[in-house]
Length: 108
Image (tube, rainbow, N blue to C red):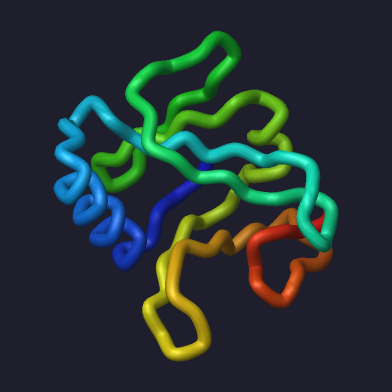
């Protein structure tokens, strides 16, 4: 399962409103090869479940995750930071053995 922090929830709701997305839209969370640590996170809005997707819901937000990505994301929390050291979404992933300095890629 993947969870969303309160800060991330508020930012997701704000972005949905800015983009005129209705309640059928959730977040598609996936992993792709690449980045300086080997694997990169990808986050986007989506409103359709694809074949093989697992769908979770946390704090009223649907999360669509394909099976391959789920293997790397079990137990992960999506968070949001707006501090001086960087602004944006980041993943607190207990499966990552190392992450890059920017936090956008990881290795297991």
